[in-house]
Amino acid sequence: MPTRTTLANNAWEALLSAHARLMKQFAAEDIWHDLSMREYDVLYTLSKCPHPVRLGELHKHVLLSQPALSRMVDRLVERGLVQRWADPADGRGVRLSLTDAGRARQREIGRLHARSVARAVTAELNADELRQLATICWKLAASDKGDQA
Amino acid sequence: MPTRTTLANNAWEALLSAHARLMKQFAAEDIWHDLSMREYDVLYTLSKCPHPVRLGELHKHVLLSQPALSRMVDRLVERGLVQRWADPADGRGVRLSLTDAGRARQREIGRLHARSVARAVTAELNADELRQLATICWKLAASDKGDQA
DNA sequence: TGGAACTACATGCAAACGCATAGACTTGCC
DNA sequence: GGCAAGTCTATGCGTTTGCATGTAGTTCCA
Image (cartoon, rainbow over all chains, first blue to last red; front, side, top):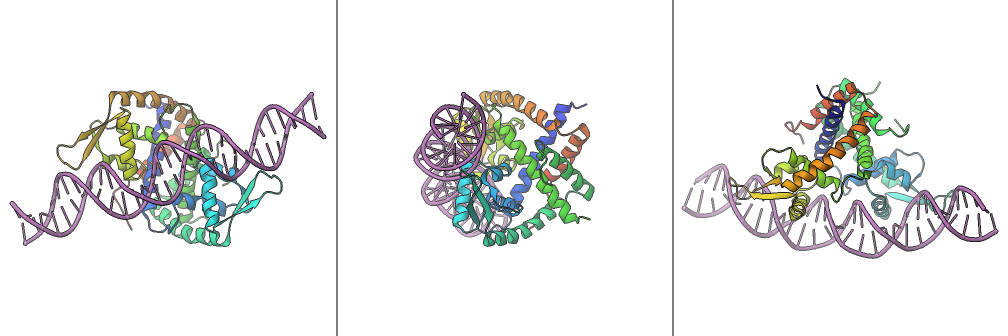
């Protein structure tokens, strides 16, 4: 009879293993062109924001240190995929959005990646399991705040 | 009415978000001493192997390039936490195991980390959800059999 | 209004990473 | 047995990362 602690640790280890396996599989796909998956992740996150977003806000969603993110944005700006704007309400701040080229790029890769994801995940899980996984993981993801869906 | 593809992508995004949020939270804990979480991950993986394990085998479980893993092992050997053995059955190969110090270190940190994990995860999920999450994620993790291009 | 405390982002620097490839060994085929 | 092809790990090298800190702008409160 496993304790609640044991159940929790087993669930987390399972999540980590699933994450590692699928990340490796997706990284091996030949769809990323000259982007790293981390860079794509940033483009994808920006693509979901209707308005230019603060660096700090972006940082909450990306597993990267703030300086590393700042410099990655540098590079994406230099490549013409992201735009930096001054924030009129806060002179320290920066607002970021995709350029048209950046949006096009994200869509192009996103379309292919979404297929890979669907193929990999539906190969192992039925619709009920997909719904359960989403429900449970969103609980874990949003736990300090009601965030998006 | 969401399609199966949409369900799959939503589930994967939820998993990624949960992963990112919890990883950040765990990284912020003050329990790692002079190890990075990636290094701890390697020690943990080794701790589960009853016999010395090949580098390539270890690599399957760690989200890191083979050269990066090789050099991380260098550093862990240099710090006295891991041992490298020649493989009698294959002269190219290397076998790895924890030293006593490495095992002690892993246990010490593991005890604390397991508590953090339990605290964070049980705060959001009940026992049924924990079991569902584990079952589903192990399915995703273990599907190393089927491979497609 | 002024200044201390705080926040947001950028930069210096050493460490660590990924990619390409080399080196060492094994396997398979003749 | 011998040589080509394949596998396992290590190394060279340019890039990216994290930590500590710097710089600029904001907030709080006397």
